[in-house]
Amino acid sequence: MAQRFDAIIIGSGQAGPPLAGRLAGAAMSVAFVEREHFGGTCVNDGCIPTKALVASAQAAFVARRHADFGVTIGGPIGVDMRAVKARKDAIVKASAAGVADWVGKMPGLKVYWGHGRFTAPHRVEVNGEALEAERIFINVGGRPLVPDWAGAGRLPYLTNIGMMEVDSLPEHLIVVGGSYVGLEFAQMYRRFGARVTVVEQAPRLIAREDEDVSEAVQDILGREGIDLRLNARCIGASPRDGRIAVSADCAEGPPEILGTHLLLAVGRRPNTDDLGLDAAGIERDERGFIKVDEQLRTNVAGVWALGDVNGRGAFTHTSWNDYEIVAANLLDGDPRRVTDRIPAYALYTDPPLARVGIGEREARAGGRPTLVGTMPMTRVGRARERGETLGFMKVIVDAQSKAILGAALLGVNGDEVVHSLLDVMYAGAPYTVISRAMHIHPTVAELIPTLLQRLEPLR
Image (cartoon, rainbow, N blue to C red; front, side, top):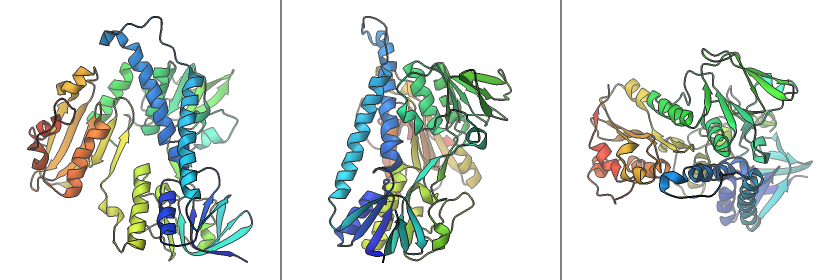
């Protein structure tokens, strides 16, 4: 006999707990299925722990530059990796406990610990117990992608999950993957004191970005002593005498790199291969993501897919927005859609890269007259005061409508400043709203109006 609920939520990533709160607040009975721990990737293996590590690495970096600020420190700067990990673990523990406490106090909600699988369109089985509901929300997230050459043998490797357990300093960390996850770990461990090599198949780092952005990030990492091996082909690895030999047939440099630790940062895959989706008739695309419409409904009535599992975003903020879209349509009579949102994300190297909207490549492909404004961070007084002048700011504008189409802010506080542009984009206001605004001095944001006053045709 199946236990009946008004709703079932599978997975406690960023979309799950707030949706549970809204459903419980609407007097619905809710079954919450979680197989491991509350909070999903962000709380346990992603945003929160990695940014805690980034903060420790930045502290070490600034401490080594103490003389630049007229500060005297006796003796060499050291990094206690056990203490770094303990700090990170404490932050994660508090965050996960907060989510668990929040969910546990929701009225009419019952938590089922275990792996949930569909046995029918509206039936889920957990540890042999059957649950049924007319509304089911899939929020199971994703996991690191492991290439065949790494997963087939006895090769010791790390992913972003395994890196969370490292409490010692690698002698030589080899990072395969020159994109967002890989570059954040590469810089933080270089700042902790490890030798770091990044191996990337593409001819440049973060290849989805404009070339000037990629080149600037490459320059920043190169200045810190990170070895970059681009145009890598036939990448493979094997254990050798207690170390790891990574083959990288690159245009420059030796064809093989010998390191002590290997981090795989080559992408992620959705957790959809063991959900029983076929039994429910729920469709997936060729990459395994659950197909959804603009309101995140699957092809099966009464079943939604939220977060990384639907392929419509791969960030904590897109998962949270998924929850808002589903709740608005289901509970508020507000027809919100995925296409209402503007792409926005950040790379948390130091300085960070903040990106919203489109880049130059998309602007050229659009064929409309376009304006672009750029400014080096050396022009920003706040950046000079803090000794952080690497990077630049760039904004792209539609020449006819004067709408802001996109921006790339690579510089100190860029991940915060970019929201002044993003909010105007959501408001549908012309760029002149910002270019004529009076901002506070001294800040990084005060240069945004000046940047928009320097627009030129995109060539």
